[in-house]
Image: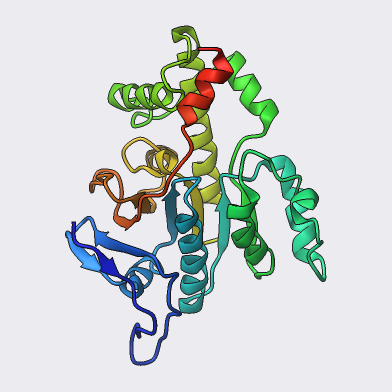
Length: 283
């Protein structure tokens, strides 16, 4: 793969200027055409989307820096309608709305938001703080804990031909097993699949209802065109699926079936999550 260095100070056009992105080495590709894009060309394309999903690797700092830059840069091109986060749940929405009306943000912002410890505030804090100062709403896109428990205990019937396709269910079951390092008992797999798909369905519902242009930030599997939120959007009625930009580490192959655009970023060193999980499970 060719590696492209994103240079500062490039002009989008004679009359529009996009601020330089973070100094991230990588390649941006339009997967529909195979064409390599500059960061500014990508912003110009994404800014046309009424609904946009950006898929991330949750523990990759580059991805969060790029998300903030994209949000700000698209806002410079046209008014942003809304920002939705997988990391926020409905029971946090009132706190978010109150903070948006506050004259200043509190020193303990994660405490004021009842931010969930599973999402590293050092990574998510900058984009949340930025969004809270903007004129557009910041919206919860996930399920509450009590909703997850209810779905796990009694998985509801999911409507829609795309989301119920056997190929989709099989791929998601494999992903659920892999993400839990093969340690989940087989008996728990149907319930875990139901939770995954109901999260996708909630994000799709929220994305459809959100003021446009709407941007959803979510994990890579939620963002995928072939198994994630986009097929739920289509099953719920809109004729056009959301645009998908996937942020992916170099070495991962992202195809046109998965996303419309990909921004490859350097590989980062991550903890051995499977070793941690095996220790937790006593295996």
